[in-house]
Length: 522
Image (cartoon, rainbow, N blue to C red; front, side, top):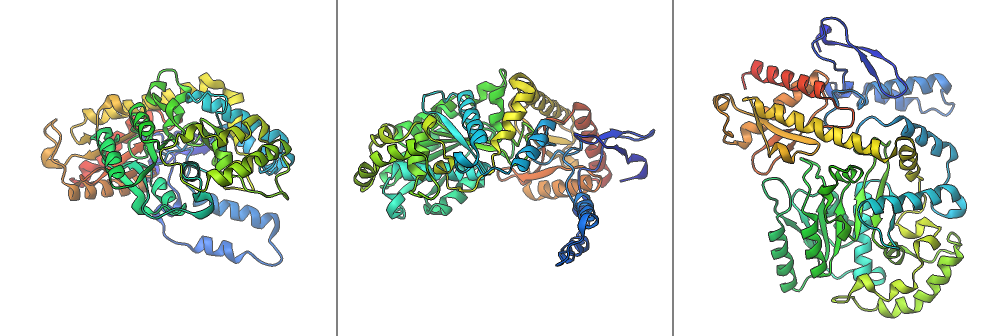
């Protein structure tokens, strides 16, 4: 970056504020690290060499922190526009330190009584915000959205096919449905839980990257005709590339009709549950059997803070509970477990194909959420960090309305950016401004096409080349952006706004990007 464009950094307890020297052309600290433009690993190798028998004390500690900081991404910079996360909130940072100091293990109540109660309570509140307000609704914290999606698929397998918990699954019997814009973790979960990649049916998306529901219905019917059992239908609320929201209400009805587990990946877009004006994007979430939601994304709660919410926590218990008397001493739940055991052995000897598993008689013997105190009985984890506390204290500090306002402000800035892109002849916006959530995707319009407002013919090779060149140039200047493929048209520039992104900053970015493209003669 040119000397006259550098900024002076003023340390803050929350994030780095920028003092702009006279003559600076834009308010931007380097969001990218040294590693972004320097492939050298010498600093890291020297750090590993310091892992001596004697240790290097405070001096060695401080030196290691300095080197790691220099090679890390600064997501507090206003130029950080590449990933679905932002600088953590002050109460979130304090909460993170607090639970580290406590170092309580959230696997059983007796090891973490207060934090277990908080996790249960906030899970119920979050579930209610998504419309899951039944007496058995709730959830559990998980180590990330991918883990939430995997746990949801595990539960679906063990509930819809109870004998799979004991005997495993029959290859080629079950069908999982996701859109081709869904997060890869759902397909990854299929291979982890033993269902395999062949069980995953990817449904094409429409031009706006939402699932084609008509094709979903056709695919489900076709799978049934082929002798497969529809096991799991995944909808996305705010996808990774352009933030699109699938039509949850229609997909939920198809899942009900097919007797399949309906899961909503709302890791990113679930934040709109806090907004009165944007909550409509989640219409139909109340039909979900489970919902994955990550407060560490748009809300600014420190990594990792994620939840799997469910309409009936008893499903989590039935799907995951195993006898471990050395760990689980919860007498209330154990008494209920003993009443389920004999029934479980007989009922689980055959699949529940065609049976209304949502109202299975096994649920009658399972403990209600208020009786479950050992949360490890609801998940595949044993040792568990009480990350739900971070969301609890973040919420306590800001309140629902302030959190909702930040979500709305993020979406407003993204739509402002989309309008800027739309106005410039050099750019080709993907999608409609009105449908933009928090990500903006676009192409650099080839020079020969830049004289017209009409959408350019999208040559994938040219588009990808231009995108990669501009990505490298902007990264060299300190901006942190990203790119992604869009259908068959090649890689596009992808900007992800966050709660700290401002209109001034995205305007400065567009001006600089335009200058770079023109100087390169693209």
